[in-house]
Image 1 (cartoon, rainbow, N blue to C red):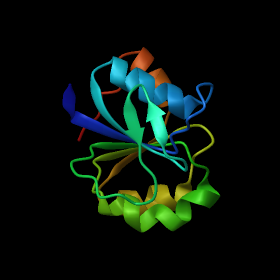
Image 2 (cartoon, rainbow, N blue to C red; image 1 turned 90 degrees about the vertical axis):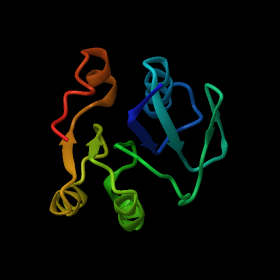
Image 3 (cartoon, rainbow, N blue to C red; image 1 turned 135 degrees about the horizontal axis):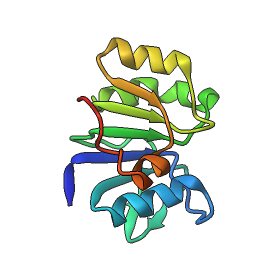
Image 4 (cartoon, one colour; image 1 turned 135 degrees about the vertical axis):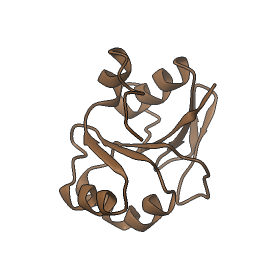
Length: 127
C-alpha cells in the first residue's frame, strides 16, 4: 500500500455511479491508502466511510467532491489535516478555499483525480 500519498476522498458517496465512489475504488485498486469521508456511514470496497470531522493523520492529498457552497463549513477542519495537496475535481472548484489553502503552503489544483490516475500523473506533484 502506498502510504506516501494517503488520500482523503472528501464527499465519498455510497452510490456506485458517483465519481467519488469510483475514486475510492480506483485509488485502492492502485495501491493507495484511501480514507473516504461522506455524509452517510457505510462501506466502499471494504473501507469504512467516515462521517463528520474525524481525527485523521498523515493525509497527503485531499480530493474534493463537494461543491463550493458546502465546503465552507469544513475549511478549518480540512486545513487542520495539513495536507500537502488538494485536488478540486470538476464541480468542486472553489477559488476562495483554493487561495486559503495556497496561503498555507498547500499545493492546489483544479483537476480530475480519475484522469490523473488513468494517465499515471497522480504522483506527479512537486510536494
